[in-house]
Length: 436
Ligand code: HEC
Image 1 (cartoon, rainbow, N blue to C red):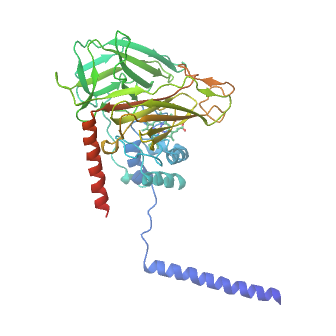
Image 2 (image 1 turned 180 degrees about the horizontal axis):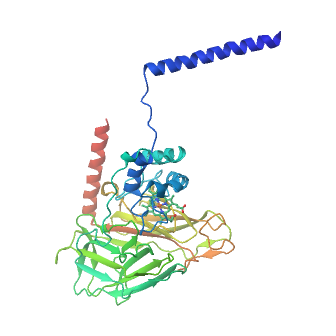
């Protein structure tokens, strides 16, 4: 009896559930919701790849695989989902959850684009209707200077050959610029030889002088995907007569011999023009006492740099080595207020400079202390770690480590600083007003 009872009850419940379901179905058919059309390669994914991936993911560029056709991309769907969800691709590793969020030339995907790629991979990476495929993206010819026609081009003194098989190679070249008078730089770009983009992992150029000084800090750095540096209007870098360009190169072999002679192109302000602000890039001091025990993760170190004059921070670039994991930049203002400016989830493969959008670039009063906090991972869990069994300290070899930070800024007079702060406050006030 009790069994019958129970099954009768279950039947009744089931009938209600079915009725509910039917009801839902009925109301759904009365008012069909805009059924989300399935995400497909041709319609949704290819446009994102064209815009954000193919400049590196195409034959002859630096990425390991092409993402141009459906056949190219299909086998990578799962890996793509992982890399874009972790915001490792496209490479732009600033942590979006803290600090300042607007940068120039930010290539990162929107949340919606990431959701689209994830949905596509999750649905088994469907091709879709071939007719939806956008026309192929045309790429700029590699010889083009993004900064326009340079006034001066300085090349590495000789051609470097990257052999078919070789360990990664780091080294320095120096070349005279032939500049006979002081000039101010408006824009600057470094460019590997055509066809050598695949082997130039990155290059960092500095200006050096016969007296051993190095003026203006970093001149420019290059990593694939990088265009040129164009300084904010009215600001520039000083290049003094007799300057030499030092090329700090990192090459990697790709299974065939490739030659490179990286060049730097420079656009000057007209002769005699002195921009109001002179931009300089400094390397925050090293921690010579960097002390990373064998096998340890999240080892923190701190560095400080005092800004002597009121300054506009143009951008920053973290620099650590293989065990670098994360780096944060704080401003400790003269009134001891601390502002966290940004953090970067560091990846040694990618030396990326983060240039602030002009209207949010930090304005630093004289006496501000820049505080750089670095974390290293010397555990076996770090796939770039050459040897977790060893203690690591500061040093220039890649097997040593660093916790440095390039800061690009221009100093100003007190009055100019007050004027910039006033403009900034006015922008903030008008935004607040607009929101009310
Ligand atoms: C600036 C050049 C560049 C851009 C832009 C770029 N990639 Fe990459 N990608 C690379 C390089 C180089 C590698 C290999 C080194 C690495 O993993 O960092 C790579 C690796 C990958 C990998 C891992 C491949 C593997 O071996 O597992 C995936 C997946 C990937 N990229 C997807 C994308 C997608 C999707 C986009 C666009 C949304 C994109 N990438 C944009 C250069 C780039």
